[in-house]
Amino acid sequence: MPELRKSVWDLPSFLEWEAAQEKRYELDAGEPRLMTGGSQAHALIASRLLALLWQRLEGRGCRPYGSDLRVPIPATGNCRYPDVTIDCGAFDPSAHEASGPTVIFEVLSSSTAWFDQSRKFRDYESLPSLRQYILISQSEVRVDVWRRGEGGRFVIAALLHECSQSLSVETCETPIPLTALYAMTGLCQEAVSK
Image 1 (cartoon, rainbow, N blue to C red):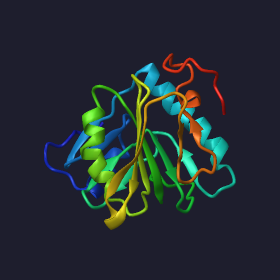
Image 2: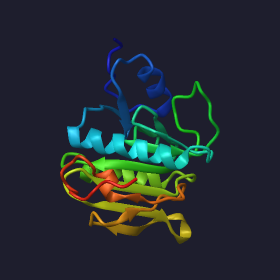
Image 3: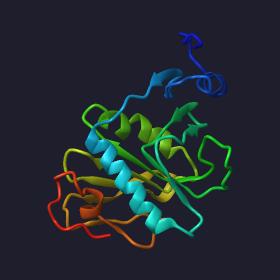
């Protein structure tokens, strides 16, 4: 395995190095950072979200992807692996990155919440194709929806805190009930609806 260099990296150098790695890294402020695994709650919410998005996006020209698809951030030189990305750009079966990320979801944990709400937020806001950034808590019923506002900056569009509420995603006609998103986590005891 190639040595991890201790200097500031640019995005092309990082992508070349990362291609030879067995583990996945993000590039943050010029430094490769090893991606660690999440909890069962984190994995369950991300998996449920992907399944619910597939139901709503099939045949609409946009595709949901899990955390294996990278999102380069040209404005900062960083490279991210969001928990879930909706890509509405051109499909290239050999590409390793999103071609037109339209909605990005991050599932928050106590160890990643600050990072997802600050540094990643600034990175994602710099992507011209991105219309929504959605943060989902894994420890409580809480979904924060950010949307492009006037002047291109993200503004809070919805704060969802009750199981009876639904999440509206710009690329989907049908909202996602929080009972379906949080099913099997123990956070919503209501019957699951799709």
